[in-house]
Image (cartoon, rainbow, N blue to C red):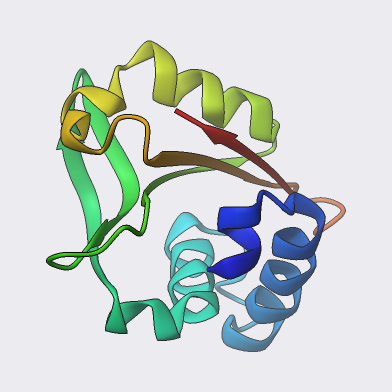
Length: 132
């Protein structure tokens, strides 16, 4: 979580690739549920400070994952969009176009958008992190 908040997309990518490799079976590696599970495992300790919501209804769609801070905290909220065989920029663009921040407007100024893409052929992940 700390490297995400700092905006270190390279470190997030490295951790996510390793976690995805360790958590997913060969038969299930190339699906969104497997990638989602890898993200949740990578942020496992975040549960102490965040409520993790799958498919949060927002704006004109559903955010794949949202990390909403518990109670009286100054921690930022995170909205995570997952993509396959596209790019992390497309994931961030979707967050903006479908107005995912609308549901999370109480966190505006303290909201981080995370776009994660996975290439099925090369098994490479990419990550883009932006402040909303």
